[in-house]
Length: 297
Image: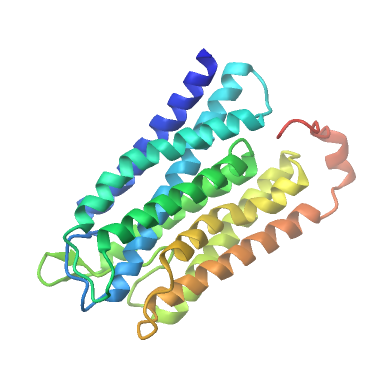
């Protein structure tokens, strides 16, 4: 019983910390502000929902992965069982929900939209949907090293793009809020709006996917995990766009980022699958022993 309590506590606390930390950073930078008027900027509303969904997805997956890693240390086993994954993912979802709901729903009460919808209910629905999807993704990804590594590197890379984009974007209306950078898009003026949205995330997915797949191959990890690793990080971003929607038809900024995320999922999966299916050299077969079938269960 003590073991399960520690796994639950680890997943809950780490997911809550990751979620609160991410929201704290964007609120501090002014990059995310829900209690304002979106009547003349409906596209910004969808962009902010995308970031909210992504923060929650990464928090739940990160919390589940940390708890799964702790179970390996406690049991001295390389494998992570289904029960551990489910408990870790559920605890991470609960922790992320406790941290994110008050940080998102309460500020959205004062939001003004040009659409006939309740902003607080919309945010609450987005958060709950992201939590449910995140729990499922966490249960699948946790304990599978190539996939968790891809998520970690891809998440870090998206944060780098966001910081670079925010550093160049001038404040609108004095210092009230910043123009919205899109998730996974290098929004800088030197790049054209549509190409940078369509190609930023696919290029990122290709670079991270190839790197993680090569490392996984060198470590003799199962081919199926290497093949799927390329889509783990991009898939979280793609799911965030799916949960928030492509935005108004007259404003294509969100839709362009939406398309780029879908392309990134395909690019990451394709490249990692190619690397996973390449035949191993005779030297690799002699130097590295074959991984046990239960090592990554």
